Length: 587
Image 1 (tube, one colour):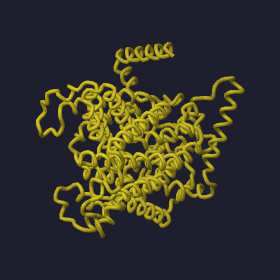
Image 2 (cartoon, one colour; image 1 turned 120 degrees about the vertical axis):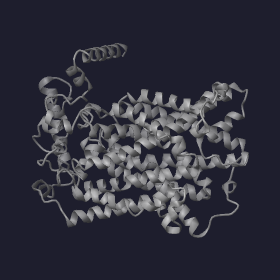
Image 3 (cartoon, one colour; image 1 turned 30 degrees about the vertical axis):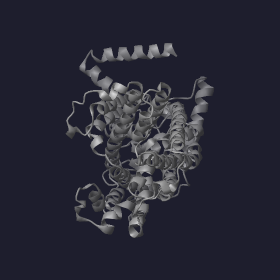
Image 4 (cartoon, one colour; image 1 turned 90 degrees about the vertical axis):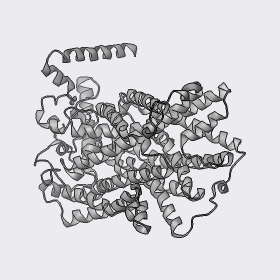
């Protein structure tokens, strides 16, 4: 292991040294690597690099246990915990809040599984998959939309993780919070918290250099560590409060009538929004699945169950905190900070709280990797394939996450819930169009070579590179809820009241089903007329994927029997989706 690492570092150093020998060498060094055999294919540089190409067999390391650990790790994030407790803070009764979140996670799991299928069959990420739906150039619109959302959410999670780092460092060094605050009040953050934010960012960037295909063991360890910490926090609060009941969080003036209905709908929408990114991003993980089935059942079973627990724990701890302090803590750092305040001199207890705080920060870090940093890296790799790799994109995402000053975005439970819901609102129509297109229009058949051809010969060129049906549907589906969304974040509500203001509380479900229906109808009224589109109508369900599997198995067998070597790692071993597709076409 050490020898391989030394050899790799030496090769890297030699490559850097070579890059400074000439301007041409520097350009070659900075260019994103291509798949073997495609280095001279300059024409396709606009559409491919190693990260955009189908994942070769040796990169498909995620089995059913990996996906189970991933979903457990993701569900064990502080986001689900905070969502449950924050709903209580805005007036919803505990049982209703929990049931809304639990059922919404069941529904979103279905959307996640549906949109992850294509990538598990063809081993491509979201940016390449989106070309089949929105066109070679049209895909840039939805890629940019997702990338912007990833930046905002990445910065937000990093801020939350930084606040937990503050608690962790204070547990070890109580004087940490005594660092002179040289920042003005208008900054909206203290010097210790800002320092913790950058510490979190540095650790996050370091882990980002590990390729996502190799992070399967990281998610296994994280899921165990974080769930242990969450149970420790829950037990401590319940014992300290000598038990709690739902009535502990009951409002003195219960919300009734239409206001209660809208609050319930808001809770359901919040649950959908909190996990909505995965309804779009899932392909960036399932492309590494060993078998398509590995990404299905563990997701369908694991995520709803695992995500229900943090929601419940957040509500119970909020109830216990209210019983102990009179305040229902809705964010994790306040929960941990209160625990720390009870042990000014108990070093063992403070170390335990340190571990809980680190685990919570790790939860934010892991969620950031899978749902924000990795997707943004994939998106940037698709927009600038010659220069950007997933790793470079991940680093840039972290830097851009700082520029949104997330500590000014989310200082209240109200703002947090609006942000969660808004996240899903922007992504719902994209996910809907991709689901309908794959299952109902193309019936699971993608022509892989055409996903990397940027001209009229491509099956997915549509109208000058744009599928106007998909683009129009995404825009139109967003319009009905747009005024209400703007009113949610405007200080004066833009003058909206009643249903006009509350309509945003059903934004995800309304937008998803509206987009799905409009896209299907649009494809029926204005069907594709190209010869390949007509030929695709005669294909069986996922026939091209099955043919690609057969070709890959044949090539693997040939490589082993004739050459006595390991299965090929070149683009020849990828899904072609068509027989006799050349290596150049695949790139």
